[in-house]
Image: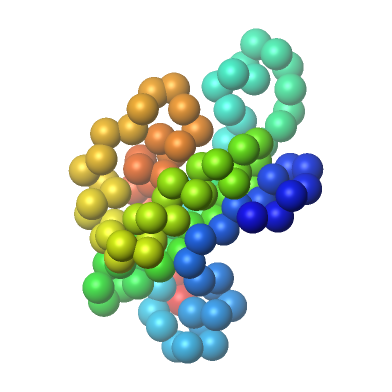
Length: 113
C-alpha cells in the first residue's frame, strides 16, 4: 500500500518481477469511473489490474489505483496468498454496486506476455 492520492494498493507480484522470472501471464485490466460519480460530475478514475499465470490459472498479482485501494487490496491479498485461480474469481458473485465487484467480473484478457 502506498499512502498517496490516489491510493495505490498491491498484492502479489508485479509485471516486472514476473517478466524477470519468465512466467507467462495473462493480464486483466479495467479502468472506469465509479458509479457514485455519475451524478457528482467528478472525473476521478479507478484502475484495476489482475495478473494470472497462464499454466496454473493462479492469480499471482492484483493492483489498484483509486480511492480506498488499500482497503480493497487487503481483502484480495488473502486470495493471492491462498493461490486462488481465475476460475474461482469468475464464479464469485460481485457485491453491487461496489468497486470491488470489478475484480470478480474481469473476463477479457487485456494483453499477455
